[in-house]
Figure 1 (cartoon, rainbow, N blue to C red):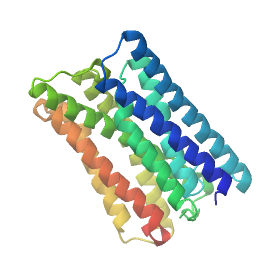
Figure 2: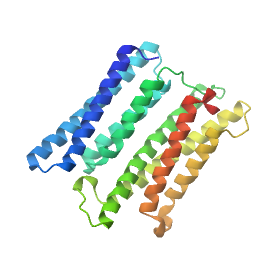
Figure 3: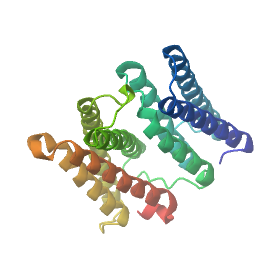
Figure 4: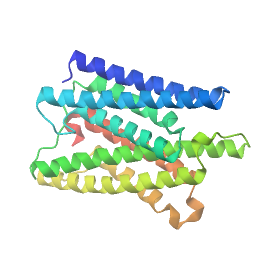
Amino acid sequence: MPTTAQLALLLLAIALFAVGGAISVARLWRDRAETDDRRLRVTSRVCLGLGIVACVALLAWHSASRRQWLPVGDNFDALIWLATLLAMFTLYVQRHHRLGALDWFVMPLVILMLVIAAIFGRTDYHAYHPLVGGTWSWVHRVTAYGGAVAFAIAAACGAMYVWTSGRLRLKQAVGPQFGSLERLEHLTMVSVTLGFALLTLGMITGGVDMVARGKHTPTPKIILAVVVWLIYAVVLHAPINPSFRGRKVAVLSMIGFVLMLGTIVAVLMMPGGMS
């Protein structure tokens, strides 16, 4: 369980992400010279980078204190890893793909995950009993949480697509920070493809583990995971049907991530992870 000092470092990371996100959003509502805008953009990214450094330091500190370096060892580690990976991806995309507004949609998710980690960090992780071997169980957890990160990115890009397309329909101006609809759709599909592959592997390893323990009745967690898998299977095959692309894909990506969050909450909060 995290110590008071570790929780203080977590709060510092939350504050850094919140400040960086607020500065980034402030760029939308005020007219300023290009030099001032660049200064705010750099300041926002510095705060984001410092928040990532604080999270990585916290993970190393917490792992060392419990003498367990497994990346997804308990609720505290799991949620911080998710938030950190999501923030790192955001920083990378902003640096290399000029999608400056991505953090407006991702930072609330990052902060939410860190807040939940602070609240539920003292709850023991409902790990799967390693009847099929420790490596198998580790692969299941990493792929399941990795898929969640990819779907969070897809949901954020989907929200940006819906917001941008809505403004364009109303013939309202859209800042260059949002990128084009084609770029947002491409990033959504890339994230869904990666998340779908990871989720499929996670479901296979988790299913074999469940059968090995003699449990053959579907649980609410399994049902939610299957529904998420089906939704993203539809999204993944959207390019086959051109009439289903664009806004519909974006909305489905958002719905799928909401259900994915429900699956994660089921694992963290219910006795035995609803397994």
